[in-house]
Image (cartoon, rainbow, N blue to C red; front, side, top):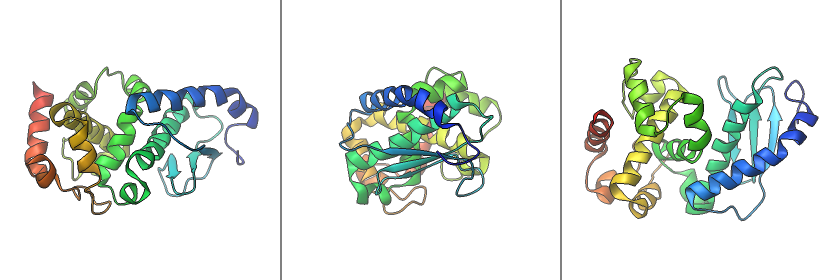
Length: 210
C-alpha cells in the first residue's frame, strides 16, 4: 500500500473479498491461476485516467485510487486486472502481450462481468451495449476509445460476449492467439471466423438491436 490511497487496514479488511473476486473470475473464465498475484494500491497512476495496470510477466497488479474514493469500485478494477493475469495464464505470456486490444481489454472486462455489469445497472453485455447506444455513444469497435476508456471496454466486452455465443470458446481462443499487436483489429478475424472485423461488427450491432 502506497501513500495517499486506502489505508493498510482497509486493504487487510478487504483481502478476503479480493480472494473471492479471484475465485469468481476463475470460475467465470474457466481458467485457474497457477501463481499468486501481488496487488499494490497507489494514488498516482502511470498515466492520466488509468485506474489499474496488470504486470503479468511480474505476477503483480497496481490499482490507483485516492483515499476518499469508493473501495467497491476499486475492487471491480482489481477483478479486471486479475482478468489480464488469467488471459496470460490461459493463452501464454507472449500471446497476451501481442493480443488485439479489442480482445485483450474486452476479455478482461468480460471476466469481471459479475461486478462490472452490476455497477452499470445492466444484466447482460447486450443490454449494456443497448444502454450505450441509447445514450448516443456510437458502437464502433476500432474507434471506441474516442468515447472514453470505460465505454470502450464495455463495447469490447459486449463484442467478446457476442463472439463466444455465436462462435464458441474454441474459436474465440484461436482468435485471441492470432493477434499481431495491440492495435485494435490486429487479430486475424477473417481467417479464424470467416468474416472480416467490419462484417462481424455489423453482426454484433444487429444482435444488439434484436
